[in-house]
Image (cartoon, rainbow, N blue to C red; front, side, top):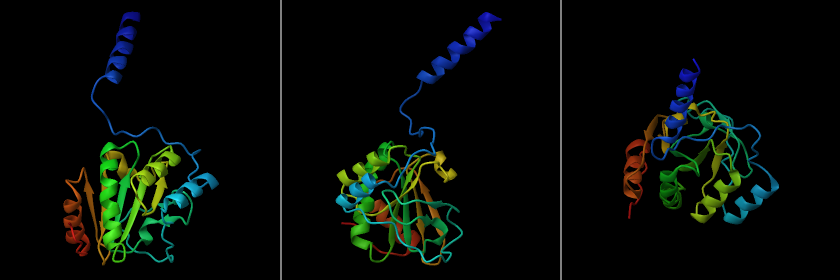
Length: 199
C-alpha cells in the first residue's frame, strides 16, 4: 500500500514538471486592490484614461453579465451597458501574446477612438501595479477594467481574447493570437462596421 501511495505522489510530481510554457493564470484572490492612491498616480502619469462612465442603460446582453472596477481608479463598468461599436480586449501581464497585441489595440484607439470604444479587460491579474506599468511602458492610454477574481469565466479557456461589439449590439468573440494590426483592423471592419486605416 505504501508503494502504491509513493508511486502516486511520484506521478503527480512528474506531471507538474512536464509540458511547455502555459498561459494558465494564477489562482484568483479577492484581497487584491485595483484602486489605490498609488495606482491612480501611476495611471494618471501614464496618461491612461478613466473607464467610460455609462448611463445605466443596457447596451447588449450578448456581453458577459459582469460589473468590474476600473484598473487604477475610476468608474465601475457593467459590460452589458457598453454600447457598440466597441472592442473589448481581454489581456493580462502574464500572457505573453497579449503583450505583443496591446500596442495594436492602442493604434486602434488612436486612429478610431472617436468612432468606437476600445476597452481593455485585465483578467485574473494579481499584480495591478505591474499591469499598469506594463501598459505605460507600451504606451497604452485606453482604459482597462480589472477582473482579479475571474468573474469572466469565459476567459479561463485561454488568452488572448477579444469581443467585437457592433452598433446594433451583436457580439463576436475571437480567441487566440492576432496576426498583426492589419488583421485586427480587418476584424474590426467585419464585426463592428468601423473601417480603420491599417497602415
